[in-house]
Length: 96
Image (tube, rainbow, N blue to C red; front, side):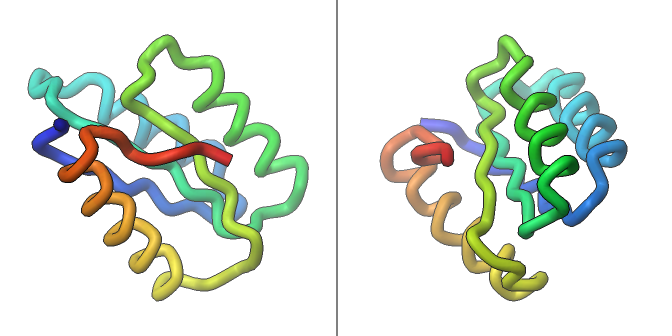
């Protein structure tokens, strides 16, 4: 069970996702799960973000693609739900 859950929201900003994921992975504290949630970006950006996360060897970083643009509120609820799942199951939940 991970002690820390990190939510990384994004919308058309693959460059910042790369930086945020690198920062997360550089931390000395390793008992963590991170979820990168794409908030219905352009298809090319979603594919790039999926490739960034998919190319990692670190299984503690996962990807989720929102079905629609739910804004900050929707992203917040997703992270809240997934952080609860992380603390109860020790996983950031399924990826899409």
